[in-house]
Each structure stands twice: as C-alpha cells, then as structure tokens.
Length: 456
Ligand SMILES: Cc1cc2nc3c(=O)[nH]c(=O)nc-3n(C[C@H](O)[C@H](O)[C@H](O)COP(=O)(O)OP(=O)(O)OC[C@H]3O[C@@H](n4cnc5c(N)ncnc54)[C@H](O)[C@@H]3O)c2cc1C
Image 1 (cartoon, protein in one colour):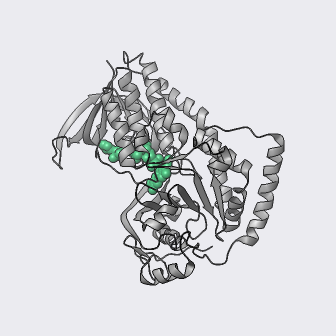
Image 2: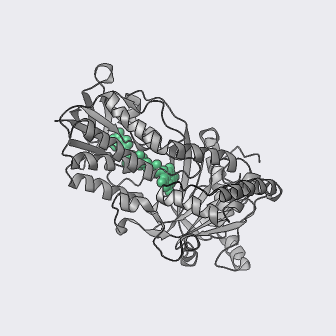
Image 3: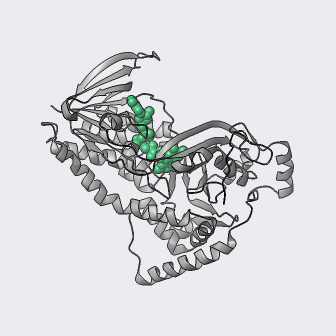
C-alpha cells in the first residue's frame, strides 16, 4: 500500500491529505504548529466556500464593498450590490487563518489522515531522489517544546510547507524570487470599526508600494493593515508600511497594534515542481498570483489536484506512481491556470508601475463592466469572454485613463479623510495619539528604522 507524507498543514497540505485519506491511502500530515496563525490577509473568493465545503463558522466577515484609493486619494467604490444586485449571494470571505487552517486540517484527520504535530527537520531522498524517503522529525505531540526525534519512511512526499519549503530544498527544486508582505493587526475604536464592518480598502501609490498595493482588511474584531513589495524592494518594507499608516491614519486613529507579522510570498513558480516522487503544491510550488497576491484558493486547489493525480496513478494506493505520472498534475495545473497567472502579471506590470498608471487603474475600476469582469474572475475563477463592443470600450478607456492618469498623479501624498468623524475632531485626536504600538514611525509618519526612501 502506498505511503504518502504531506509536509505542511496549511490549505494546500490539508486539501491534499483529505483527498488521499478519502481514497484510503496511508497518509501522514505534518504540521509544526497546530495553532499556527499564518501571516495573511485571509481573503478568500466565494467559489472556495462551496468547492471546499467551508462552513460559515470559519468566515469572520462577508465583505461586499471594496474601496479603491488612488495616489491622489480618489476613492472608487466597488459594491457587489451594484455589480450583482442586492442578493447577498456574492461576497469576499474574510477569515482568520488559525481558524480556517485548523478546520481543514482536522477534517483531513477525521477522514483518516494521521495528523502529526511535528517539524520535519530532514528528508533523505534515496538514490537519484527516487525514494523511498526517510523523514526525520521532532514530534511535539507530548506537549514538549523541544520534541522527540522520530523517523518515518514513505514512498511519496507532497511538499506543502510554504515559501520556506524544506521539501523544495531536498528535491533541488530551484529558487524563486520572493516578495515580502508586512501586516499589522490593529484594534480600532468601535466608531471606526463600524465603518470597516463589511468594507475592505485597497491603497495604491509609490508611498505604499512601488509594485503592489496596501490594504486595510476587516477581521473578526480588528483590521489587518499591510502592504507588500517585490524582492528587489524588500529593504523598503517598513517605510512602505509607514506609508499605508500615514495615508489611512485618519481612519485608523487611536488604533492599537495587537500583532505585527511579515512573511515571504513567491513571485513565480519554482523551476522544478516534481522531482522523483516528490511534488510541490501551494506556496512551496510558487502559486500566488501577481496583482492580487492571492494564494489561499490556489494552494487548496493545487493540493487537491496533486492528490487526485496520485490517487489515479496509484490506482487507489495499490502502486507507487512514477515521476512522469506525477508530472501530469503539473500539465493540468498549467493548462487550467497558466493564462490567469500571465494576465495578472501583465496587469501588475502595467497598472502598478507608476502613479499615473495607478490613477488610471482606479479610474477604470469605476466602470461597471470592469467591476463585473474583475469580480467574476476573482469570485468564481472564471474568465468571462467580453463582447466585441465591450472590448473596444475597455481598450479606449485604458488609453484614456492612462493619459489622464499622468496629469492626476500627485506631487505629495495626503491622508484620506476620516469616514466617520469631522476633520477637526480627528486632527485633535491625532495630536494626542495616532496608532499605538507596531512599527516605529517619527512625527512625520516615516519609519524610523528605514534609511532608504523611495524616489517617485
Ligand atoms: C501578509 C500576507 C497576506 C496575504 N493575504 C492573502 C489574502 O488575503 N488572500 C489570499 O488568498 N492569499 C493571501 N496571502 C497568500 C497566502 O497566505 C498563501 O498563498 C497561502 O497561505 C499558501 O498556503 P500553503 O498551504 O501553500 O502554505 P502555508 O499557508 O504557508 O502553510 C504551510 C504550513 O506548513 C507548515 N510547515 C512549514 N514547514 C514545515 C515543516 N518542516 N514541518 C512541518 N510543518 C511545516 C507551516 O507551519 C504552515 O502551517 C497572503 C500572504 C501574506 C504573507
């Protein structure tokens, strides 16, 4: 009987283990920290809820409003009421990762996967990396923080161990560039929190990121405020976070930072994703999209697709799949999502490259056709073909917006006004206190530990 180890108990690992266990394959899933709160915005598309049978209890908020904020503070609202009508069927789910990950992992265990609270420290890959594979791990299941060293032999490994994947190193998968994402979880006064009840904000501008966006996402009882940037600008991350804080400061006034987190995000897939009988899924493989930085759905989906291929090739666990059979998962994956990754990369290169383009991007988001196209593809992961007239309109709009955008780009960034208080009141509040805790910023809102600054 085939023996499979899934290393990593995030969405990719749990969804892989679930499929294997359901097929009756002997499966171990390793997670080093069972209450792990993966640094993440926690936004999931609607289609994931039904496709992965997620209960309402793991969704903290159902967001139906997205506010896009341009470098010059033009605010454009995307309301799902406007796009889909007032049915409340559509929403972006906001989750806490510790809750969602635990649910999916426990479900895999209930279906028969052996859940091991352990850190895999070494992988011996056998002759020519073909296995059998010997894992060495620290078993924390007895509550001891140092763990008991144990070994396990398996025929096949799924590397679902995230951006710092040990499996990728063992199989010599090759490196990828990693963007960095930084996030502060901030508790707000109740008046400000009501504003973020079912609204997420997305800020663009060189002040918040030279190649991505900054965000304020509502969570259970606080907001997650963060930004990201590509590997080449990593050293600027704290000054960019200070930029988001500064722009949103009137909306985050008197907030208190309860958690600071940072984590790498892969910028593209690894050169090799299957070697021998080892396959990478999720962030370990490099499946985060450009433009949106979305990775949870793609992690879950890749875990599932990889495991389905293993079930098929092993005839339900009767034989060990070959490398070529495992690679069929890659062919199917690239066919299904290759174009999505490419389009989102092109969009990021065009619209996040300078403030003029960012002004154009926000302006275009005001158009209902653009909103529908964006949300259909995000919420349902479907690309809806445009009618020829719509295509012409979109092309003309893009050109017009890009030309206008250059003139609109500001010389200086300013904070957006408070959404719930008079400006005078907020100004007085800011004199006493802006945001308590988190990264250190000087009185001008600049990160004090950052020597470098961004040229526009
Ligand atoms: C700040 C930030 C915000 C983000 N926001 C969003 C968002 O809003 N929406 C979205 O879709 N995506 C978002 N992403 C991306 C998303 O978090 C990832 O794409 C997703 O978590 C990938 O899932 P995964 O299962 O592949 O890996 P992970 O979630 O990283 O899970 C890997 C697991 O493996 C465990 N592990 C690692 N090594 C070992 C080992 N040796 N032994 C045992 N266990 C191990 C880890 O503890 C972890 O639980 C964000 C990322 C960041 C950094």
